[in-house]
Image 1: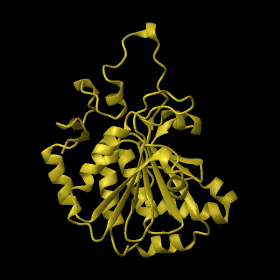
Image 2: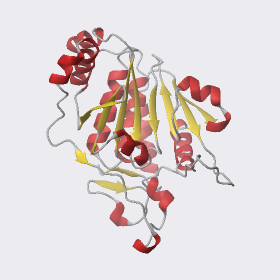
Image 3: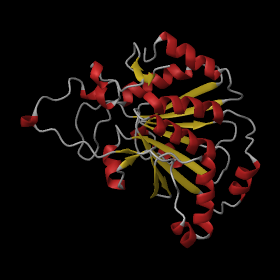
Length: 288
């Protein structure tokens, strides 16, 4: 199993707060027998599939549909899926949240909490947040790059998801940088968590949901003013990041298990960061 008994019990307890039906749509890529140029293998898909199946089994409110990415072009287009592995989360308000990568560490914690929030029948924003949401003029896509090892990435992912669940004009994609380093590098990510608004990088670090929504509204109505008043992340909340360098044959031994490493499940004890622990199933979770 992907989860140890203690982790299953903890998630099941959190799922007791689910208020309504929760739909998970998982987009998968099965291992290929033959390499296809331009279509790289996605070795973490199997780990993600196993984990989502197990998560769905922990609550009667959750339904799981699995799509083979290449065999479901209509669903891929309709759901706006850009890569795999990806899970689309939809609750009572049908406001989709997308998580890319095999969920692990702090991003797994954020995803579980986002699932519970998505099941809420009626969101109750503060008066100030309600005013800010009312100023949004057009649909906006939030893209958050984070690391499974970084607590601030988990908080940033949950903040973006929470804001999305308050407005039909927002949608959120969360990418695990460990699996999508190439996309992160092309996008200009140099620190985590990295928040993109309509494909433009606006913040590296942790931003409060209200500040984020207020900035989006300002960007939509007065972009020149928004440029003079950029988002201000919490001091010290950004962690420098740079793409991993390619490994050459002469540069030393390769990781013992590159597939597990990509999924955040490397077994060597040195791979477990401070403040985290490794479960029996190999998942990295907060040490609490």
